[in-house]
Amino acid sequence: MDNVVEIKHLQKRFGKFQALKDVTFNVQAGEVFGFIGPNGAGKSTTIRTILGILRSSGGSATVFGQNVWSNAVSIHKRLAYVPGDVYLWPNLTGGEVIDLFLKLNSQKHSARTDELIKKFDLDTSKKCRTYSKGNRQKVALIAAFSSDAELYIFDEPTSGLDPLMEEVFQDEVLALKNDGKSVLLSSHILSEVERMCDRIGIIREGTIIETGTLDEMRQLSRTVVTVTTKQPVASLETMDGVHNFDAKSANKAVFSVDSEKLNQIISAVSNLEIVGLQSTPPTLEDLFLRYYNQEGDSHDGE
Ligand SMILES: Nc1ncnc2c1ncn2[C@@H]1O[C@H](COP(=O)(O)OP(=O)(O)OP(=O)(O)O)[C@@H](O)[C@H]1O
Ligand SMILES: [Mg+2]
Image (cartoon, rainbow, N blue to C red; front, side, top):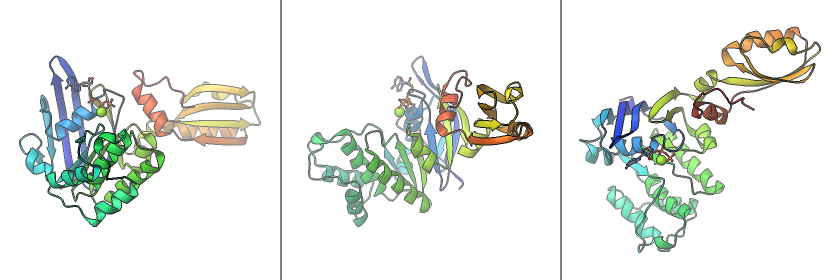
């Protein structure tokens, strides 16, 4: 089976409000799929539908080839999930809750669990009511990472973690990937997505607007170049594929170039006798800002 998660034209209405309009993407076996989009775009709603917590209003969603609504119980035995807002039993200790989560998932506290508790540096003897947001997330993450599942779903799991713990999280996700597990990760932390995800889906206002590898998405975007030439740079400004032209002097300019026009533009630059050339490929952040933006065009990539 190639697709662990398969979502086609998924829709979800809450009364009159349509939170999901057209969500289509797959998570392939053995990949880390990044699910990104602005606040309120529909990431958590999609994930809750995949988990069978919400019932869709249209379209289809399967996990392991099974319908997410009618087969939720058997699907849940094979997946681990960490939400962004982790609620724990206030009177139980962190350690007790980890074991409870494991038990609920038919898993056992193992050497691996202890290793994770150490790595995430969690004091498991404290009552959950005393835990900070980050510590509550650690409890859920430790239980999930110590579960032997085929699919791991994380919905903004690291919003409360400090950079050191963020690093531990990323290492653990990469370890899952090396073990051939599949991961669906929704996140606002772009470096996290950039480092770990094989493919990315971007959702905006309930609709998936782009899916692909980061490289494929970069192809759709622009490279920022800074050139210094012997001859005047002004002639470049009107070339097809050049945007946001900013002449720093008669012989130096910064502008962005459509990826498919890069070749022509660079030849034109070289005709002007290059003294200096610096190019910066679009970062994920540039791509985000461009996609998040309604017009999709007002960001100059600098
Ligand atoms: N139970 C609900 N009833 C009514 N509206 C809801 C419900 N749950 C979510 N929504 C609405 O659906 C939209 C999508 O919400 P969702 O939580 O899926 O966004 P998100 O992409 O996860 O955002 P964030 O990045 O802030 O977590 C929002 O407009 C939200 O207000
Ligand atoms: Mg959310």
